[in-house]
Image 1 (spheres, rainbow, N blue to C red):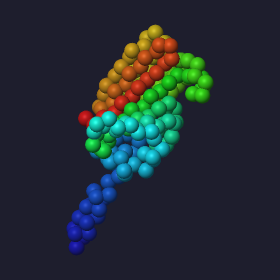
Image 2: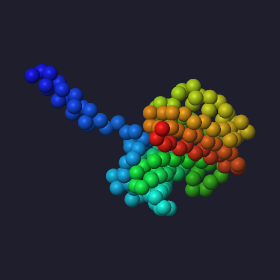
Image 3: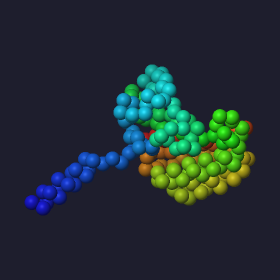
Image 4: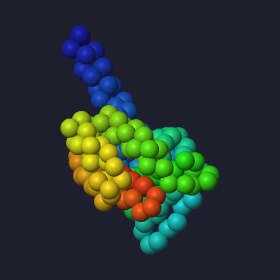
Length: 166
């Protein structure tokens, strides 16, 4: 009897696994209809692909400027986050110090998603100045898929982080 109760409990735990496979509590392959906040985004469809764009809103990180979800035939295939170094998003004036802080926040988030702390530290080391940070990129496997990070500084510092299923 104990074995049967234990087996049922184990099956329930496996069946109730709420671990997300994509960033921000989402799951790869998740349908557009199952994402409660999708109506808050601006979605554009081109053939089988739909891209929905969001600003600074939950569940995305509050230091992000723009976030995108890409769907193929209605299934989530990519998540993208854009960081912009400006004094204020309403009146954009380039600010590298602001960018470094946002990049540090993003590296902290990526580390929580399984990015190697050494990779994060190395990336931040390359971005100690505008000159050394320009065109820096990194790709790494995380718990929520493959992450790709790319930085450009011309004249405003911008980082784009994309995630896709590995």
